[in-house]
Image (tube, rainbow, N blue to C red; front, side, top):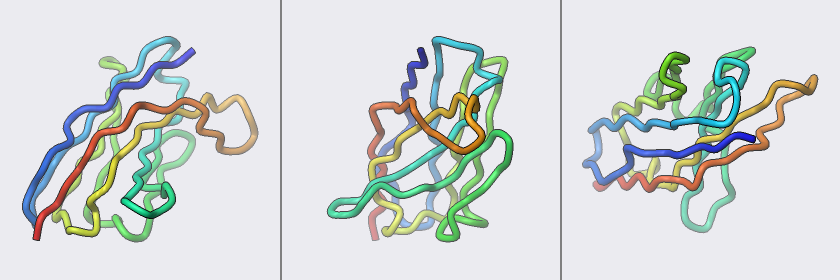
Length: 118
């Protein structure tokens, strides 16, 4: 029902910035909760941020990352500032239909690589 495509990943030095984009199609974008997750080598996928019924961030990115959305463009964004080597990971966009009384990210993008060098 929902297709998600991430873009904007790349390589940056510590202290730099990147903005990730997630283009959505397949259903009414404004009805979706959107989220960002990441997975570093050898680690489990972890929550980064979400925007929808509520807005939340992982403690590790608070004050540095900002999630936003532009409903007219069917796009969600993740602005990443003051990047650290520990932020290196594949970043995934996800969507929540918000049809259930609890968070359920059931649609996922293919991921985009972010590499932060020392």
